[in-house]
Image 1 (cartoon, one colour):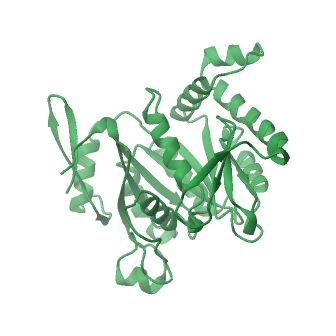
Image 2: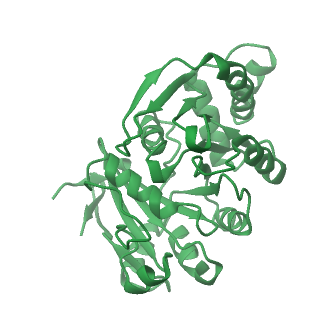
Length: 327
């Protein structure tokens, strides 16, 4: 049985308004990393996290499911929570044991009631938040409109770190605004992609959105603020540092995009998690809160009022740090 130290474990809650694509995002993660041979479908009752008969009948998530994803030397426990307000207790239980929250936003519906509820609970539990504009392949998908609404609702701390390449039926990849590279997906649901230069028609928009990103990153650190105000460019590592500090301080909400159903963008999200892990300023990793391990074990026993299904997280304290196992 493979062991993971706490330095290599992430516990990330997926929260959103209903039907924003949380369950399908876990399917994309599992398929991309080779844990499954195909992407399940909610309508067929073949998704990994929605396994209860009542969930199959209703076509919605009713319980929180822990979905372990192994990516390189990381174990990422994604906690897929229900989106309907009737089951908000599941969201609360999941956030009690999480490092951070990934809030999914529908590319058409935008900032809905469930979106604000998820972010309010994340703020209540003092958790850093990240956002993903999902379903960019939907008819009438509008990244710019949703981003603008998000910034109007939560302020200029909403910082785009990706830009979509195309939209609706033509959505085929993302632009990384930190590295200023484009990633075009094959379209086979495999999650595989090719790194290319940014298309010429997107360069002006990419530079505009990168400026939003750099400004948000600079506000996360006093030294970076001075450097930014003096007109000096920030390096990729400095941008990551500023984003991390701003996110921990709840001033910055990094924003990505994708289409989970087509497995576009999921790989880049995992890359962002792993990219942060290779630096001391990891974005998705917060210090383990006091009593967090106890809370994890209590969730497995159903003592927090939430029913968590899947691979539970167990651990034991050792002199060389906390070890965690699949169990």
